[in-house]
Image (cartoon, rainbow, N blue to C red; front, side, top):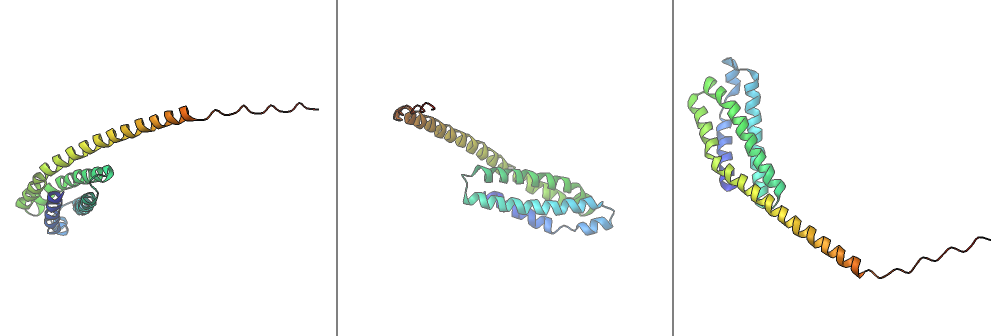
Amino acid sequence: LAALIEQAERLNQILSQLTPEQWEAKGAPATDTTHWRDARSEVGYLIDAARAMQKQPEKLSLALETLFRLQAVEAQVNSLVEAVRRYQNPAVGDLLVGVVGANSSNRDQLRQYVSDLAQTKEQEFQVVDQEAQRCRGTLVRQAPARPAAPKPAPAK
């Protein structure tokens, strides 16, 4: 997670140095500016999710959110790369691809962690469910016999 956050912060620094308003002056569609804003937002969300996961690594929901945010960042940056290459600097586009690519090992480790965590949670749930079933059975067997309900008095 620390490496993932570090790479995300590096990516955020590169994105903050891009100049999409100048791209539009060079003929780029406004959607490229939107992709840039979305990419910056997604990187921020990824950093927040990864930091939350650092605090509670056993929470499956945080692990999934971090993984999904990482995938969203990759998608946003990949949609932005061509505009960066065309309207700003091909080397910066290559740098973006390199930073995203450098995070691939972190992504693979996170994906494996999420899979392992989900499997562990399923096993824990199965144990809890079996124990609950055992306890219910014990309680049913130990329940005192209830006396028969009194018969209603005959009507006069």
